[in-house]
Image (tube, rainbow, N blue to C red):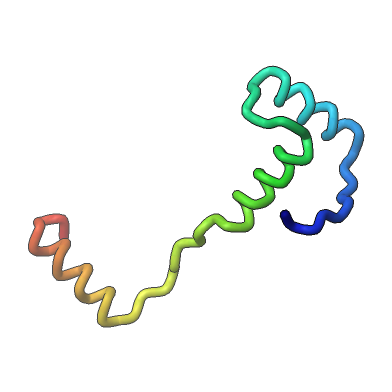
Amino acid sequence: MCERVPVYISRELYEKIKKFIEAQGGFSSIEEFVEFVLNEVLTEETPSTTLSKEDEEKIKERLKALGYI
C-alpha cells in the first residue's frame, strides 16, 4: 500500500461527498472517493491537438476519397 498524507477540504465539500456516497454507494470511504476522482482527473488522456503537415494531408485525402470534402 502507498504511503498516505493528509489533504484538507472544506467541511461543505466533505458533507457533499458523504451524502453522495450514501446515496450512490460504490465507495467505502470519503478518502477512497477523493483518491478515485483525483486519479481519474490526473490520468485522463489529453488529445493531441497538433498534427504534422503530412498527417494533415493524409486525413484530407481520406476525407476527399470518402466524399466529405
